[in-house]
Length: 351
Image 1: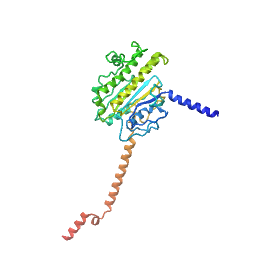
Image 2: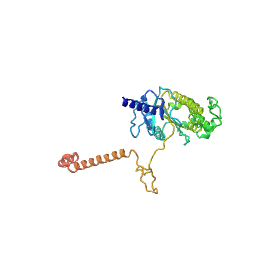
Image 3: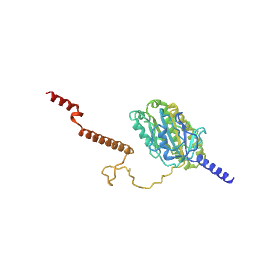
Image 4: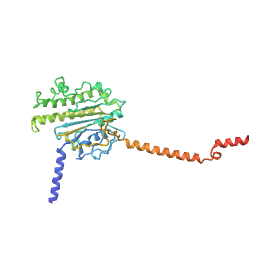
């Protein structure tokens, strides 16, 4: 009896830790991308692989995670939008959406997914938009340059957008949030970016009709500043989480509408990123330039083993073919095996 009670308590504690910890929430997904219901934890470093699989791309290593079911071979999402929110464990989203615990929340980027999109669809015009407070950058290709050229990128530009017409300062109920506080302005400026991206997508729906899939990666750190400035028990934190939850749901609805429900929208909530514990060492795959100071070797590509086996076995087959052909030619009877010599001998006899 006591053992049963103890096991029940541990199960409840594990369930609560999975619910209250960092999370990955899928706000929108097409019918052919199925996320299973369950509390299966996923590591933060595996999130880029999950995005690749939802977009129909292959990954280096298999993702042993039961939350994502096998999808259709003939359909792939038209876009994937991943929003990382720093400063809290989870947001109060509806209960009918898929949410999973996030383990080992180390910093990650979608650069690998962006490179795959650029490589596979170099002749098209994919939209690859990546914004982060620590790395203020905006990646675009083709027609997307003219669409998002006025989108504020730097923190100074985003903050200046709040003073223009149609900003969130005039449409959102700020209540306890102040326009004169730096932490509040940083949070509101990131909410403004969500609204601006949605407005641009609604205005330029032709971007969703090209054959190339689009990728959106946004990292929001404004709520983290709210927590640092006021704390989690403050009315500013409560108002900020309410505003952000509503903004993310509207953003997901707008993206799904533009791409005709063929888009995946995920939200990763992380209270704080853990610095990965790594040991400084020299890898055999270390990148180096020719003639470097330390005489390092060239970097081996991941396809090196495949190319090596193709070349090796092709050379072996060609070598065996040359040996067999040479042996048969050496032991060939010119008067019997060759029609040329046979005709020549008959002609000589007739002459």
